[in-house]
Image (tube, rainbow, N blue to C red; front, side, top):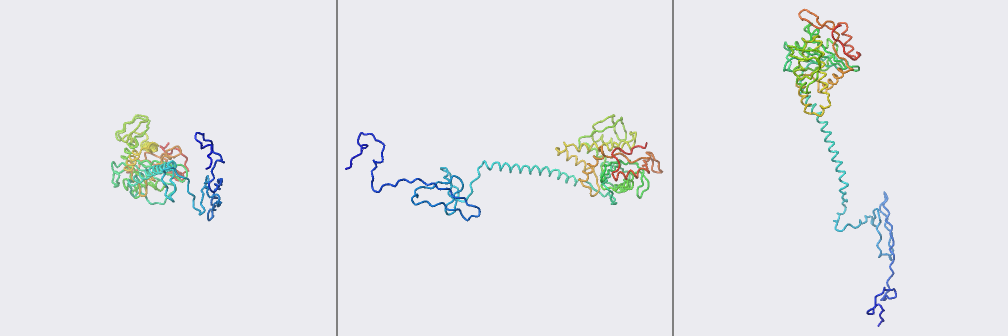
Amino acid sequence: MAERPPSFEPGSRRRPPRADDAVVVGRPARPAQPARRVPPATPRRPGAQGAAPPPAIPPGDRGARPARPASGTARTAAGAPARPAARRAGAPARPAGRPAARPATARRPRRRGRRLAVGLVIVLALLLAWPIGLGLWANNRLTREPALSGAAGTPGTTYLLAGSDERGSLVHDATAGSRTDTIMVLHVPPSGPSALISLPRDTYVDIPGHGPNKLNAAYAFGGPPLLVTTVEGLTGLTVDHYVEIGLDGVAGVVDAVGGVELCLDYDVDDAKSKLVWTAGCHEADGVTALAFARMRYSDPQGDIGRTQRQQQLISAVGDEVAQRSLLWQPGRQVSLLRAGTDALVVSEGTSILDLGRLALAFRDATGPEGIRGTPPIADVDYQSGGVGSTVLLDPERSPGFWAGIRDGSLPPGPVGGLPS
């Protein structure tokens, strides 16, 4: 029996084992080999058929497990991706071939960007849809009738504006008593200033098929077509668009814009127009504005003064319509377009876009760079047999005046007026 080492004797304290205390039984144990570090597999190059297999492990090192690469994608000898690192304890296994889920923090910015883009598209669509839809609605409400002569065109664009005194009616039957208190020619030349020229209603003209008479009689004899033909013979300009507004409709338009400021430098108490006015500038509602535009018997300049007040009224309405605040008030836009389209009659082929161009041209003509006034006048009380008192245009200066309007060669500023 082998002798026990001292460490096994009862009562003795255990000491640390030493190499010579080991009991050798059978074949001696092989000393442990240090684990060899296996380099990470070389990544596949573009165009390569497969990744190079890792170096073979010597038979003596089979007990040591090769270290995993710190980064990159390791592949087995067969070319398949190496198994990923160990998952957290309790994490569900991901199905083979399914891409890893994107973290929620990465999805949120993308979702916010999509929502923002969708919101911008909706806002842009609404901004575009409203004016387009409003314009189509207004265009369909316009009353159109034949008015143009079909004559060969002249340079630029010419509008004939007429104010009818057919109270409460926009249907023309060309019966006796139908008159136009307002007749204006608005011309936009190819180059040069725009011009707004008022033709006095009593202008002495030759009406085709009816002989010499007052200008507004052409409307009574043949409605808009005869008025257009007569104005073309007087001015030498071909009318491209005819626009008529019932004077009763003026009140509705003025009320739709919330009233306008009008100025007159003398007191008025006119029984025919019902205008009562104190000298100065005042805010006028629709009824007052209509009387302001119709009054002539209490005007020292008669019909010439009335044309000036009519231009002032239309300019004031245009200024109110051009206010930027109207862009953010869709209710007022609808009211204004409804009042305007109810009061207007236009020639066939005239659209709401043409009326928009007319408004811009009117604003240019009444601005500092425009021409406004009347043609040259020779006599405001020209007597002709059977016609009564008329306004005679200057026969010598008128042809050159209209040619300058047509070509845009006249300088900006007021023109015409009472003869000196």
